Structures are given as C-alpha cells and as structure tokens.
Length: 541
Image 1 (spheres, rainbow, N blue to C red):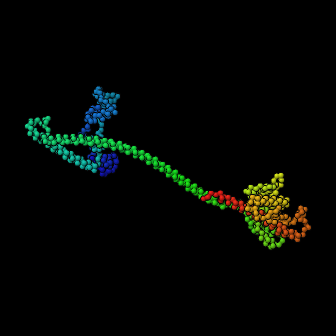
Image 2 (image 1 turned 60 degrees about the horizontal axis):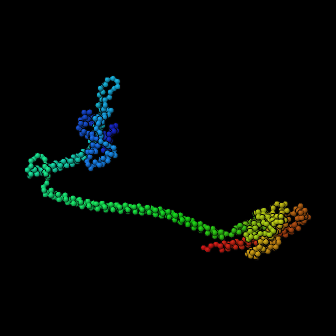
Image 3 (image 1 turned 90 degrees about the horizontal axis):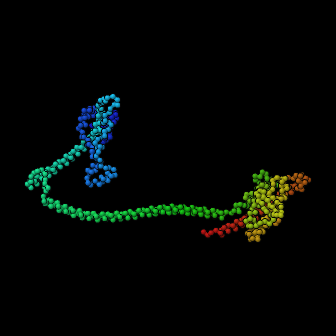
C-alpha cells in the first residue's frame, strides 16, 4: 500500500508510480521496512499461479468442440502443426542455466556462500511484482485508487452473493420437486432420477409439445420467408450492383462533362479575351488610320510658309542693308516677307546667312525631285542631285556640266562660284517649268493659275543672284576683275549700292518666294488628290 501525499525526494529516489493514475508514490514505512519473514508470509497467502498446460497443440485442438474442429484443422494446417510422436523427447525437461549447479573447474566443489537477504526496497519491489503477476490488478496503488478499487470489489462481491443466493434457491426448488415426484410415484429413494423421472406434469408436457410443434411450424414458415427474403435480397443486390454501375457510368460521364465544360469555358475565355484584344487593336488601327488619313505627309515633309524679314539677332546686319540712309532702308526691309521651307529662310540677303539659304535651296531641290517622282515625270535635260546644303543640278548625257545650288560664305570662293550658282538656279527654275508643263498635259490642278515662268524670271522677278559688289566694300583689286575702279567716286558707289540692295536683293527674295509658292500649290493639290483616293478606296463602315 502506498500514499500519494507528501511526494518528495523519497518518491523520486524510489521511482514508484501508481499503476492506475500514474502519480508518483511515497511508500508506507511498513512497506519500506519489510522483512523477509513478512515477505514470505504475504507470498504464501497469494493464490498459486495456474500451471501451464502440458497438452501438446494437437491435443488442445482435439479437445475443442465439434463446431470448431473444422476451423481448428485449417489453422493447424496453416501453422504446420502435427500431433507429436511419443519418444525420448517427452521423457525429460530442459532446465535453464540459472537452475543448473555451477562447479569450479579446478579443485573440489565448494558450498556456495550464503547470499545476503535483500533490502526492504527490493523486497517491496518483489512483492509488487508478485501481486501484479498473481492477481488481475497491477501494483502498487495509491490510497485513493485503493479506496476506489475496494468499492468496486465490494460491489462485485454483493452481485456475486445475490447470484449465489439465487442459484441456491433454484437448486432447493429442484430438490423439493424431485422429492414430491418420488413420493407420488412410490419409488425408492436412491438419490437419482430414473429414465422417465422428468419434472413437470403431463399437461405441462403436452402443452410443451404443442408449443414445440407450433414453433417448428413457425420455424418452417420463417425459413420459407427467410428464403424468399434472401431471394429478394439477392435481387436487390443485383439491382444495387446495376444501380452502382449506372452511378459509376453517370459519375464518369459527369466528370467527362465537367472536364469538357471546363475546357470549353477556358477556351471561351481565351477566345473572348482574344476578341477583346482584336477589338482594341481594331479601334487603335482605326484611330491610327484616321490620324494617317488626316495627316498631310507632303506638308509635314516640306512645310512651306513666309515670315517678315526682321534684322534681329544678326549682329548689326540691319544697318548692312545699305551704307546710306539707315532709316529708309529699315522701313524697306521691314516691308519684305521671306519665304521659308521647314523653318529655313530662302532669300533676304544680307540679313539671312548663306548657310541657311543653302540648306533651304537643298530642301527645294529635294521637293522638286520628289514631286517629279510622285507624278511620274522625268526631266528632259537635267538631273537634280539633292544633297542638303550642297545640292546640285547636272546635265543629262552627253552634257557634263554641273551647277551648284549653294554659295560659299568665303568671299574669294563666291567670286568664282557666283556664276555656277546663278546657272543652277536657272536650271532648277527650268525643271519647275517642265513640271508645270507636264501638269497641264495630265490635267493636274496645280498646273493652271500659277505664276508665270520665263527663262530666268518667275513672276517677272529675276532668279539669278544679284551682283556681289554691292554686298562688299570697294577694293582696289576689284578693278582688275571688272567689279569696280579705284577712281569711282563715293557718290557713285552710294548710288550703285542703293540700286543693287534696294532692287536686286529684294527682287531675288521675291523670286525665291514665288518658287516656294509654286511648290506649295503643287503639294496642296497632290495631298488633296491622295486623300480623295484613300477615302474612295476605304471600305464602307
């Protein structure tokens, strides 16, 4: 017996726990100080363990009831059990090494030394082991679990007592009934019943026999009903199997349908997304088409306009228009407009630098060449070579002349290049005239109503570059080249400068602006014709 209270170092040292609640125990002092005599006394009072069966496995199988014989035979065959043959093997018992006496290899045998009696704790452990092995209850137990166990055993004892009293009363009733039967039949009392000494009256037995026949008839009817029910169950099982197969087929069909539906839904989603994407692309394409249809490619490539000639930011060029009266020349310069192509001024010398003018003439040459390609015309005697600020015009074979459409800013170079530049401008004006004549032949709208071109004049303005003597001071060396003499008076120089600057430069600027006006008219008419073709060829929405 042990207690679960006061658990401390002793319980931890002994390591004992209750086998029911698993709580640590503190053994009672009477158990801890158990003597060998007390241990033997308690052990002798315990029930002896049931001896192991000495029957072989085959005899054990043979002792089974007849209803279990068939299953036992199958089990014995599966486990390869055969009845043992009597022989020498059954005449002895093997003993373990711990039971056999040990003898010393050398010297006479000595009596073993007396072993010391085990300590109290070891006796308590041995006692708990014996109690656990010889009783259906595991030990040790705490006080609370022992109390509960006593209550349970007391209840079982009371139930067994009542059951024993019932058996005793039943046995006494049977014995009285037997004595009454023997007394009625006048038989000798030999302590046993005869063959026909049965208990109960004839009426009771007749009732029991009738009841037996009724039960047999009822059993027969029930067996027939059972057979019918078994047939019905078999039919139901067949129907259930058929229904199960149909359910499996329907489940497979449903699964296939769901997979197909999922695939179609996914495909529908992709198609819908692709349709939305296509619609978006279509809208963007329509928007881009409208933008392209409304765009004027020619106007974007060659933007032609005009600006007033203002001598701002030229570092004193406003006073370089004339060397005489500055007020009259300023008013004259402000009334002139200069044609522009892509923002580059064409003309307006000396306010506009030659670098800008050369670039503008290069764009003009490119524009004339592209218009000729657009309308399918090839010039008869010239070939335009657009090369930006260094464009030129060449004679077609067998001619070998080349005319520049640019002027160098260097004065010494300009003296020799002036004639080629003027001839290049005349050749370019002749190309424009050929293009206008071709437009009249092909009924182009821009060929009628334009400015008149005759040789080196357009709208009665000279396209040749004015003399350069007016744009530079008189030098003694220029008399050798025929541009002036050293004996020229200051008054004559002033009059010539006024005439060249006020008339020559302005006339050349107006001629350049007229050239741009002709090209602007050609570009506008061609752009409108292209737009009309696009609209006519566009599909009807």
